[in-house]
Length: 521
Image (cartoon, rainbow, N blue to C red; front, top):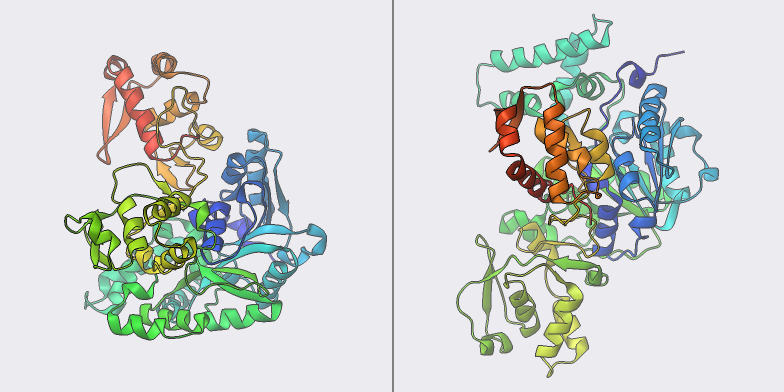
């Protein structure tokens, strides 16, 4: 029996921010799908590795249920150890092949399949789509990521070279060392440093995962790594009665970021799949994160206000110039900006909505925007105001970073409360690693002092008690010096300096924890 390559070389298991159920939920709402409540959802991850993506989510959403599938026994065992240590009851990690999943697994509101589809043979790819058909709840959302053409074509040549170069080596770790050495050698040896080949090699070297053997082994040396044109991927999905909902990177790969000619051509294409394919041609895209849902739903081609009442907007706009009330009420064009880009409108309802986003206050709910505009424009019917606001080009304004919105219900506390509480997972990780998963599902590097303080921030201590207990931890530490991040640079503080400044340091760290999304509401 062939050895499992993921047992030989376990893949590093990380959080993938875009796959958070709350983000999948938000994306679905924006394009008109009333997706299930993410806080009580059933979530399935195919190819979960050791659970680095879903274990933090299970601690954050105790009313949800998570199931992770992976056919690497080693990785499942590693993940299960974390689950046991955390005492979680709402997550299952199962050592099983994707081919063995059937209807008896039940329905899931969100299905995550990140970094699997391109790296498995065709029968497993078809099974992934079958699972999305049979195991996805009626309004559920699936996300599948994969390598794409035409961008992967250039990378494929590196993969072919590396597989040929390492064919004489048996040990997988030696193979990875050879790949790393060979790519560096090719980069140094290429005579024209401005050539597309030289730039490609430099790009691959700069990929964050390039330093890790698991990334090199599975990206360059695996038997399976097949890229697809987006239209090919969707042609495979359609027979399973699945449709394209959106792409998790749709605001990065947006027609509104292209020149006017390209933008107008793409926006004129009625078929959203074809428009997305041409976007891939233009950008030479090499990786996609597709969102799928069942084909019976009517999905909007652009962002709709249908479920906008679930969102709040950050107030990031400014008037382009001093604007009187009369100008807002008339059909006069009024311009706004975000310090970089200018937008203008003649519609009174839109202008008044944008005016609310110029005020230096906390984020404002969409429902409050609508209510305020309605009150200020009594001469317009409620229907007329809704129709006017629905003409806001949200896709364009979000892609250009003019508008910024988020879900109303946010578990993250950006302020330091009287008894601050860091997430359970961050407190669990801090004693053993300095790279911690925050509540926004990002990896954040902490210095030694931050790691020592984090486990104490459990919601039971006020600030004074944290200062006292943090001081005790420092006193009892065997270390005489401590790493301390200042402007992204590491400095060393003597123990005496830490203790003399313990109150200020504690407050600074707590403020940083709030800003870095570690504190719960």
